[in-house]
Amino acid sequence: MMRQDDDIGLSADTLAALREFALEQGIEVGQDVRKEVQSAIEEAKGPNDESFSFVFGDDTQIRLNGLRRDIGQTLNSTGLTLWRAGDFLSDFMYRNKQLFAGKRVLEFGSGLGLCGILAAKLGANVLITDGDDESMPVLIENCKLNDLDPNTCCKQLLWGTELTKESKGTFDVIIGADIIYEKEYVAPLFASASHFLSHKPNHLFLLAYTKRNVSIDYVLDCARKEGVGVVPCLFSGSGHVYEFVRTLRKCIYGKVKHAVELTLHPNGSGVFVRTNLEVAIKVMSKAIIEQGHLQENPMIELATQQYLSNPGHPNVLPLLECLHDPEFIYAVLPFCKGGELFSLVESGGAMDEDECRHWFTQVLAGLSYLQHRLICHRDMSLENVLLDGPTSKIIDFGLCIGIPVDAHGMTYSLPPAGAVGKIFYMPPEIYRNKVPFNGFASDIWSTGVMLFIMVTGAPPFERPDDVDPRFQMIATGRLNEMLDSWGMQRVSKGVRDLLNKMLIVHDPRKRLTVEQIAQHPWVTGGH
Image (cartoon, rainbow, N blue to C red):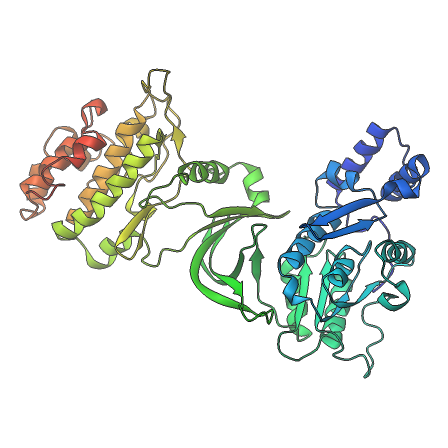
């Protein structure tokens, strides 16, 4: 590994934050911001005063000297990533201490020595390395501070060097926390990892990585080229590990990926094995979200889904957890194997009314829960209902809006907020976007269109506009006449009655409520 300038890899935001910290502390800085901040603190407080402790459980404590932790806490950014990646890796190590006891562990690019020292305290035979001349004295001092002999457990090591026959395969586990700064370091890193790592079963290379100047795709490609097996995973701070399997679809803000949860094998071998839990993970680009030009707001969607997930409802898709790194937000969701409700109509045409009733009553139950929580969906559609076996779940909450309510529980209309949603399902009052609208009634309209499509196999109109002749027929109470003209005499009187009472144009307040729909004879099993 080549020598590193101390500020390589620090983002502009991080440098700006460091300068702000220096200004707050009255520290004069020039070009080498991080060194000058650290030197000023050392001069003011002395090297012994900058020691801080990491505590793991009730039995393990590590004291470290080096760059003061309160700088990292003040920045809370991805530039000084020792804390984010190092905290994560060390927490993972402590939770899975059986992976390290009795093992030969090599730490790359240790810096202050946190993870290597922890491995030693967990019973490993460790070699803690760094390639930087200035880091070694601090690393040696920290080993002494934690009762480790630096003569046997510390070494200066440049990646890509000392790849001798004698050193090949000498370690069971290799660890590293945020040790990638530039592309030129990546290939030597994995060449060294491939060389030093034992090829016996259960060997591990644990690399906690937050992006600096090198994309994760480039890192993974280099790993594969050097013969290091890679399983792209998402590690959660809650202890969950998800393996990405495939991309389900691309979205305007990123991708939706199919993943499975991994767990450590109960035999203590350190091998991760797949569980039966499948999830879908929405991978959303922060850069795209920050541009703010999306009709659907992913942040509103996440907030709404989190709100609806407690206590949750079987017909509303919950948010299992939400994670993020410097580039992406990851929304972990249940994986629904049946696809969209729309796909049933698309592939099979109109449903018989018993099948239609099965799905409609579940959609209605999910919508009832949303309304109980004072949420207007604004994008109810067959495309926004996923199937998981015999169960359906409402999804996509990016257009959701809260319903105003007073202290007495009285709800109020919402001001015009744009012609949003899918045009086939859009209520006329939202399409016109001129007057306040009742959020509950607008979702009833869209749900009525869903029912219409399920029983006929086609949308009732092209757009909710008076120039559309089919919409005109519905607006003037001639829905039955339209169905008959389509040759839809098989559509029962019961479902026709229900559609007529949901698809009311001129006075949305007269549409059935979700409670009234649930009591309608067709819904309860009548005709």
